[in-house]
Length: 194
Image (tube, rainbow, N blue to C red; front, side, top):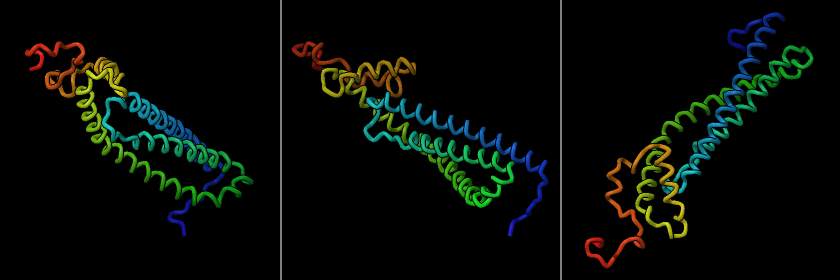
């Protein structure tokens, strides 16, 4: 039994279908933006993977990519439903799909709310991962000859230039570690050893 069922004449049904069609295609554009943000975030995390801790998380960008693709597909199908509802022959074929489609849309909206909550909660985890990775990167800054760390110096330099920062918390972080390679130091000098 429907709750507050309404009867529409053809003119009102056309206006409703046109309005919903516009909203669905606006939602497709938003889905493309969410997908693009997920790709951008994943690329940025990969670019800085050298200076991130080993337990870096790609869960958030992967979810953004997935939800962006689902949003595009689901809303494009909704736009097609609205367009086809104007033709009486196509509408009779599409009418049985409306209820499952509405339930799918409700589930998708719940997934979107979960994703927003997860993005907010994962922000702190990404911050801690980056802070730990920067601390390790500063410690290994001098190891340009070690395999696997040969680009650490350049990556850290470019990151600090790009974000206009120095160290992890401030410039004093550089005083806590030896950041000059041993091959440039005279280890026979007692002052240098200290």
